[in-house]
Amino acid sequence: MPSAVWSKPKTVMVTGGTGFVGTYVCRLLGQHGQAAIAVGVEPFSEEARFVLGETAAATRYVRGDVCDSAGLDAICVQYAPDAVVHAAGLVGHDISLADPAKTYAVNVGGTVNVFEAARRANIGKVLLISSNAAYHRKERDVFDETHPTTSIYAGNPNAHYGTSKMAAEQVALAYYTFHGIDALAIRITSIYGFGMKPGQMQLKQIVEGAANGQKLKIASGGHVVRDYTYVEDSAAGIVAILNFDTRSIAQRIFNISRGELTSTFDIAEAARAAFPDASIEVSGEMTEFEKATLKQRAPLSWAKAEKVFGYRPRYSLRQGIESYAELYTAFKKHSPPLAST
Image (cartoon, rainbow, N blue to C red; front, side):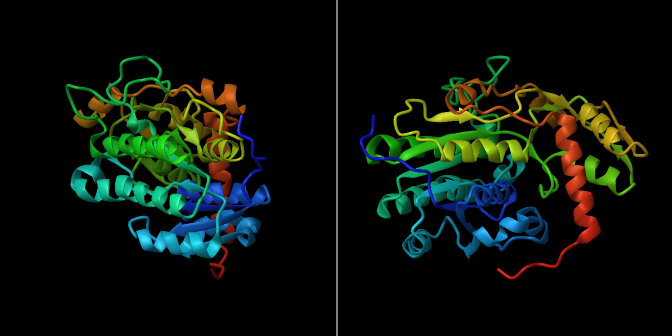
């Protein structure tokens, strides 16, 4: 066992801290009495400020880019964080195909920069927020952490995005093995909730469209399934691992998920339950891309995270959508002005 006395970090640098998942991590840190340094290329949006609420006082926004190594060093010197949650990155299959070089520069090069900044500043713990996209072609009905992430025959089916997340995990493990940083990678999947970005999943269109009284017609994808995880469950798992003494834990990569596959049909049904007057039609037709991705879908097992950290998802699909809808409706009603940053 490590000889030094361990205590949970008081100040945490969150790269991508103004993004969707990063904002909820910052909020939860504030609720735990911890200060968050939210590093991002853009300040908090109005929606993110609404999510932070009273915890905004415990969160400081600092403009920064993970591709700027010197800038990260300066932030570490100025704010002296005790730990890092590295949530910054480019997300998406199509985005990665459109610009492979930028995907690797941000997701892999940026990860190297974060770990180098941590190494130079003697920051003991870094959590890399990874993705289910790191898994290679599905070989089992459930993805646990031992499922293959590489192949000698073909590239990752999640394109350069999946490859970059797999590579970033290996960077983290190398800094753990050779530089003594308490590094872990947390694989999350299909995160949804108030503040999520448009375009990545149909769930946002369905929930917010229903809340706005729109007549929705989804042209395809009713049978597409994902392991949808409510953002508060994801943030809770991340912060639980951050605040756990992980120095003697052998396993370094963990899944945080709901652990169930849900179809777009199921999303529509849950949205109708939240908004009984909603008009939502979802087609069972499938595009070629949807057919291809369907072959890769599998739930992520969170059994290891439960055993080690006591993690359990709190939100069912319906509960998560209800919470999302409540926050979205409250935001629309109040629309608070942006607070100064």
